[in-house]
Image (cartoon, rainbow, N blue to C red; front, side, top):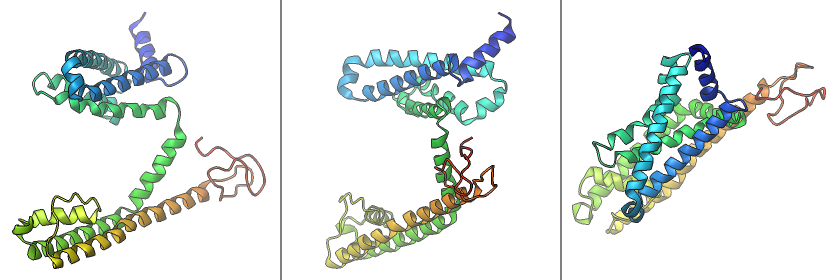
Length: 273
């Protein structure tokens, strides 16, 4: 087989998503990725590691060699090698192999292979799940639109944490576990976020009163970012409706789920192409 034909065929198999060899290759690759990640989780269980650790490590080495060969093949048949290497998937493909090689020099480094799960994101491309990608883009655009409001909110939360942490340091002091301002701020973060580890707690009545105020304040703090993001999601949905046009009557304002124009009754073009 001529070199050019072989390279084109390899590119079709590795990068292709149409039914046939390309899709079958990606499905096989995803199954192998999931098995390798599952083996990694199982290997972290001490009882299993003591009995089958050597076999699991050997399997991981085999998986890594397979993924290394696949990565090299992708570079070889890629029409733009630099673009692939520097792309998100290219970097993930590379990082999915490095930890195993590092484990020969740094014990335990192979557990960083959990990043390999990011390779499964190709499922959106392979199975043409553009509906899910569109919904993800809506969320990303909403977060981007509300970034300034969220930034102001985070600065306000940080100010509240500093205030409550400083008050507890002054009221409780080192004898009750508040040994420094950073440790007092740690308590404030745990309290305001409603995590409540309980490793530090106020002992004096005044300290408990301040803690109660912090807990009540936390409920208001939790509600704010939800409202900000919800408002942006509603606006994004309205923008999507205003941009969807009927090809027949040229009118806008159709919902994403609509199949027919609400003005003329003609069939609408699917929003995902």
